[in-house]
Amino acid sequence: MGAVATFRPRRELEPQKIVALLAERAAGIPKLRRRVRSGLPLLGGAQWEDDPRFDAVNHIGVSKLCDLYEPDPLAEFASHWMAEPLDLDAPLWNLQLVTGLPDGEFALLVKFHHALTDGAGAVELAFRLLDEVSVPAQRDHGRRVPGPRSPLRELRDGATAAISQAAASAGIASAVLRAARPYPISPTVTMNSATRRLGLVRIDLADVRAIRKAHGGTTNDVVLAVLAGALRDWMINRGQRADARSLRALIPVSLRGREAERAGGNVLSGYLCDLPVELDDPLDRLRAVRTAMERNKQAGPSRGAGAIPILANQVPPGVHRLATKVASRAAPLLFDTVVTNVPLPGIPLSLGGARLREVYPFVPLAPHQSVGIAVSTYRNSLHIGLQANGQAVPDVGSLADAVTKSLAGLYQRSL
Image (tube, rainbow, N blue to C red):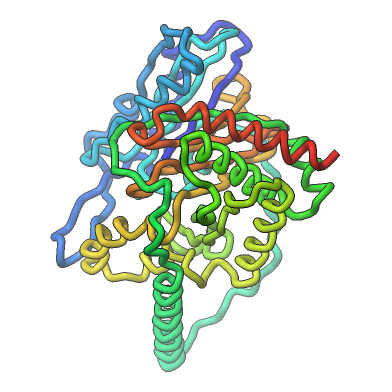
């Protein structure tokens, strides 16, 4: 997973100074110094260890855009860069500074392995690479510190927690089986490919808020409805039927605020939400999304078929290794795409004094799926990053255009 961020410097850019600044800050982040050490396949999982040869400069590259005649040269460059696999024997991240953008701007491309962190954690890591800003301190609400517990109480609480966890795991597993859709095969299923195509879509947050004000729901509901309309038009333009069934999205939900005491790179759950591509009317699509998301929220993020990440975290390492390939092949039976919302601070950010202008996040592609969608809100804009299988979606620009067209159609119905 990763992101493309663009910056506008106040003076002429000196790339090596930016590289030195990024390397210095990355070297001070312990998580970025660690690599994976694999254990024996059937006896245990992998472990993190500090890389004795770590040098942050080795993870930072510099490039200049030369072919500005491409429809979107930055997206074209980022597509090839994102497709390059990370070195699994080194810390699982890379940065790329890209110069040559119009008006003297530059871009920073970020790539993290999902084993290192989840989306919210990636934002925290990237935030520490940027210039420092004053953030209001969180208030201490005076939570009472529990006193020591007796051994009998610890034993009882441990047994209760184990039984509760087992019951929750069984409930999630049962929900997963009930949610599987073996037929008909999803129109977005494809052969896996190492190639990637990225799309960058920027829309005005004021338009999204106007739709929400006119028809209710949340900003996320409106975005999902817009994406449903875009996927509908995209499928029709590809000669596929859009009225056969809904496309189902896995929507990751961060549990960091609820489970802050947990260690590890990923603290996630998720919802499964049907994107009503079969509906022609934009308002009907928005109402259907609102109903589906309200049902998800009432059930909560820790149960149901969308809570697959919770179930994965509760499987023993040996079983996890054996089950991973089976689970990945079964992903298209549960969902057709991933749509994730990446939270960003609402304050102005900068790198080396250069003002941050745009941030386009990218979610990893699930096996056999054509496209993954990530959304971030920064200042007055909403940025959508499309990551597509390069073999299945050679022209991701058509999907990007469909997003803006879908927004316009819903906005017109809100006037």
